[in-house]
Length: 77
Image (cartoon, rainbow, N blue to C red; front, side, top):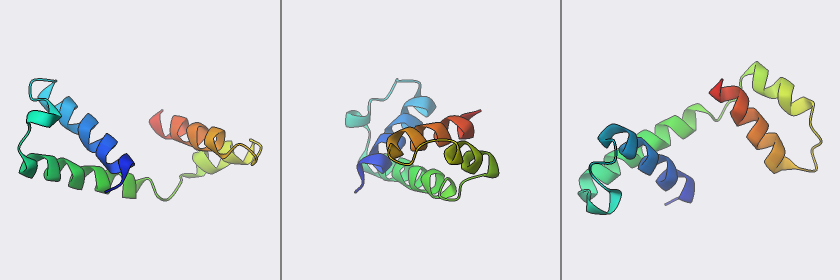
């Protein structure tokens, strides 16, 4: 399983449970459900919006991590 899916699943679960049910204490079936939500959320971000493309076009391509962060920042606005 992807590290990104796991990270997103954990933050979704933590948001739902408000920290009352730690990930490592959560039943595997719950964890898999949150992984499913995480995959859907990540898949939805696969296609950039026009605003994300515009910000990416303004940055140097030699720093792809900076381009990625800038695009995500636009998505979070």
